[in-house]
Amino acid sequence: NAIKDKVFIAPFKDNKACAVSFTFDDGPKTAYDLALPLFDKFGFKATIFINPGITTEEPVKYWLGTWKEWRDAIKRGHEIGSHSMEHTILTGKSPEELNYQIAQAAKLIEEKLNRRAISFAFPKNLTDGLSLKEAVTHHPAVRNHAYLDRIYDKIFIPIYGGKYLSEESVNKILDLAIKRNAWLIPVCHSIQPKGSKIYKSTTQEFLLANLERLKEKEEDVWVDTFGNVYMYLWGRNLTKIEFKEKEKGRLIVILYPTNENVRLGMPLTVVIDAGEATPTSAIAKRIKGKNSIPVQIKGNLMIFNAVPYPDPIEVLWKE
Image (tube, rainbow, N blue to C red):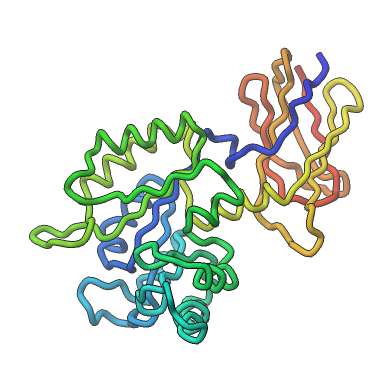
């Protein structure tokens, strides 16, 4: 059985139907204390957007996370992004003010966390042409619908929180994202401590139920940081795939970066449709390499992850 003309880079990692990236704005302490332990429990990763200009090493403001806590979050695989230096609305600002709120904030985060903040979110999601230009100069991943549409045209950025958002509504949003092959980017704020009133907050119980549903749907949903999903989609757009069928049970696949000035480090998922055949085993490796690349078999599909690079990949399988 010849391979059909179906060798492609999956829209999302591991050929999942959709992606979900939880983002928490304003660097709230409750995100660290109450939300991240739930993400750890299920093996999921989240993104916290902080304001470095008001972040401190030790607790000062009871509602704000500290540098120490955000360093620990990074060690656990979560992402820390920038939300501007001081949570200042960035529309109508001078170039000098934008440089301080965006460029200098990025520099401070890198100094404090020893990790570049690749992601940025505008305070109150308000932006204009000048502020967007400054943001993308210093952060490849910017949570702005028009900007993200350049790399993927099925994006939904709802606010998760407030008394009018029900668990049923969130479940419907997820089901729709799976059906439409969307990238779902929930915007969260604080997890509401008992007796406190916080803007568009949610409860720990609400988040737990949401993550439990995602775990049930894990076969269809890729849950990862905003930065990781962005870098996958960006890399996919900059990669060309070619393949050559030499003989039955053997295929040569090449992932070409289309911009030689850009180094792509995020592995992409390659899918090979074996047509009517059902592979029983498969292996893959670079022609010039020694290490094998793990291959998943799902029905008639063979799936593996590889970084874009001109060195061809040989795939061998048995039916």
